[in-house]
Image (cartoon, rainbow, N blue to C red):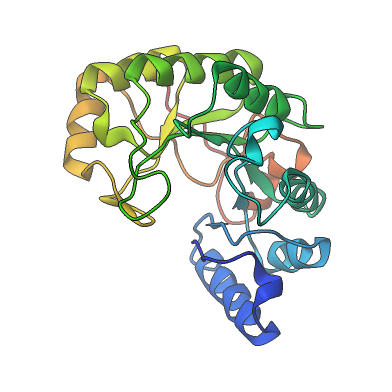
Length: 249
């Protein structure tokens, strides 16, 4: 679940309470719950964890050196502080970046190096291709090529061997062959659904056909992650779900 804005500190306690209530109710259905709400304080992260949150998305976006050319409303350290708060609260970390912002290869390396040198690797590492939206400063930016995405996925897989490397936004401009190369290079997850937040995404039927061709199978829900630390080992699911062995492609 996503919310636009700088973070919960921008809204009233009542509004943040509504989010906590939604997290609790969805978790009670036996589903994993991931939110992206912006920057968090340690207390806000703890409140989300107590509500049952299983994962939090907070991308670093790009390298520390290039970040100031993309936004001036927040600091890179703010993003790192939120990831620390999430980790210390016992929530799984989902953090990656966006390729195609006008950055150089060195910035892509810097992004992945920063993620790979966190105290624990993120459980999930989304690799997004920029989706240029009309009316934004990036509207004329060309998307990265398929091979650029493959290289980033492969590098992420080498640096963070146990993380879920998620082929995320921007898949619409990738051919089936380019997506297949990304999976062979180490991607083992996608963001599914016809719409990804505010931009179009691949149709479920198209993804299903591609996965069938490539003999790829879905990961069972409610099991632990290999990356991260004890907070994401799956023990929280044990009371409601028996241990499950992931299906191998």
